[in-house]
Amino acid sequence: MNLFKALPFFFVVFLTFVSCEEDKGTDIDIIEYNDIIITLNKGTYKPEESAHLTIHNNTEKDLVLLNCGTSPGFDLQKRIVGKWNNVYLLECPAIGLPFEILAGDKKEFDIALPPLTLKPSEVEGEYRLLLWLKDKQSDQFLEQSERATDSFRMTN
Image (spheres, one colour):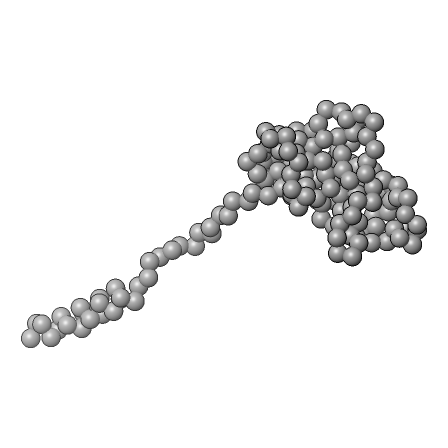
């Protein structure tokens, strides 16, 4: 008779054991971020307007940003028929000492967008800056996707 009284208890313990899953807790998995984030302070500019540029180096490598004097070096590209085309190549009389952007570091710069020699009707469009950003160790330019700003609009 004692066996029949104990059977429901063992049955409940068995069901609890079978139905329980491992407690994974409420911790959030942290995903390591291995990108370079390049941002501008606005989404629309005019030629020769000042822009604030921020570079977050969330990689494990040290970077070098070549410059012209005291400003970062870059090419201005316009999207034409789905492709990025250089519309302004910065003329640099003398390259100054490069800016170092160490792994995990953030740098901010104020730059002046260049004057455009396009016709006024051709200025409107989608642009990006292609920075002269290199891997410090290999002295190789980064891939274009790693050294380009997000696109922005240019208006007259």
